[in-house]
Length: 282
Image 1 (spheres, rainbow, N blue to C red):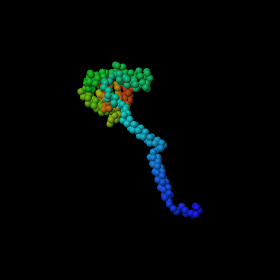
Image 2 (tube, rainbow, N blue to C red):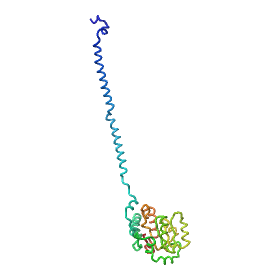
Image 3 (cartoon, rainbow, N blue to C red):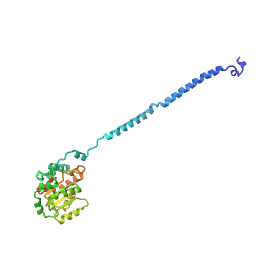
């Protein structure tokens, strides 16, 4: 019977069944594609484990940077000499302070015997300033016979009183403070600013100078070049207690401290040990 219908038998008759089959199959296909699309969206929106790791690393790095940034302001600043001195109460200098300074310096480079040779006994020192004196009042205490001593001084290239401080500006200040003490004495400023060593040597050799005020660097150079002799020197006063704007004393400044020790080794220590020179800490 199938042969009688021929090859076109499927194009004839009622095709409702076929349409029904198509209608039933099409929704299923659409639903299937929608589900697949949803799955693709989910898979695309959900990064796999391999993608999560870099994000977590970035987050941890950002946190670490944030923590580091927050820690920086909390780091403790190292204390400077200025901080330490500003927070400490001012204390007058004593002979023990000078001896300790020399011992700490020579202890690293000299033998025990050499250190003993540079020791300054108590007899080498004048009364120290207790922070209640001006320069003139202090010198009147430690040099009570100054007017008589200055009249007897006739040597050139030498001074009776040598005042050593840390800077050129401080030198000018101290010379102004000498007004009520010096009397008729001639005062010479001894520092390196704008003044050559040769000029100082000429000034010292031309006439009698009673008081020299200057920095340890220039004074030590003058002594070493024999422009300033120690024969007439009787009083050596260090501007020990003065503090600059950074709250540093003269011996707290490394370069000045080095020049200070150099000055002491130019023959000052020997003169003090012999009793010819007395040291005062102002």
